[in-house]
Image 1 (tube, rainbow, N blue to C red):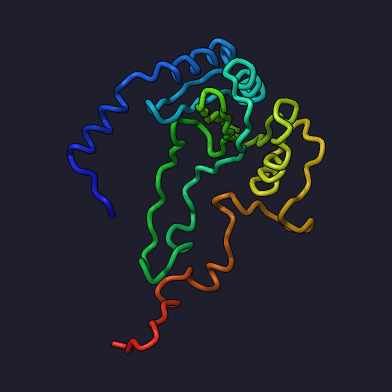
Image 2 (image 1 turned 90 degrees about the vertical axis):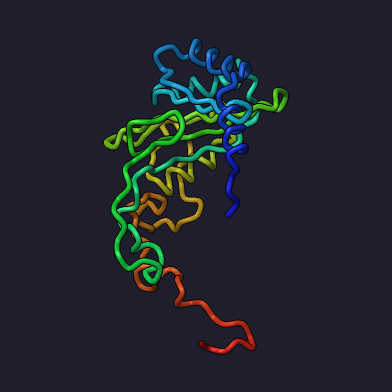
Length: 219
């Protein structure tokens, strides 16, 4: 593992303390466009911008980013389940550490959050050479959000995948149906509390599958 020297660490800290006027301007433009729908943002100067909006402003945020910031390129959309795995080390190699690991606290990443599930989209301006990540909290008792298809037609398959893998409904989507899973499949495989039965039948993969190279002898 590469270790950073004190000089490298100081340089990185200094870079983060520098203003990023372009990304600050983007954040201010979105805040003006969305009003109360704008929650907060986080900037790593010279690197990236994250903005959190309310669920009701999800589609409006995409529209404002496209029309006001010039983000014409829709990169991707997905969901995040911030719940730490309830299975702990049981989902890893049991040979590595047979004792279950205590559950980690839930942390929602840059620009924060208040719920287990969040929607995330990534948009990019090919003229400004800048990107933005927009996220929105989803309440546990209503995992639904408006479709982005009227804003970015390319969101179609991304939303179908999030519906299929996380169980999130996209209001107004014209064709929510499976992409990867058979129609009779039950469950949402990308949720943290979905048990991966194959790992429970056989430890994953751990030292049990390690084989010697030809010519080596057992010690």
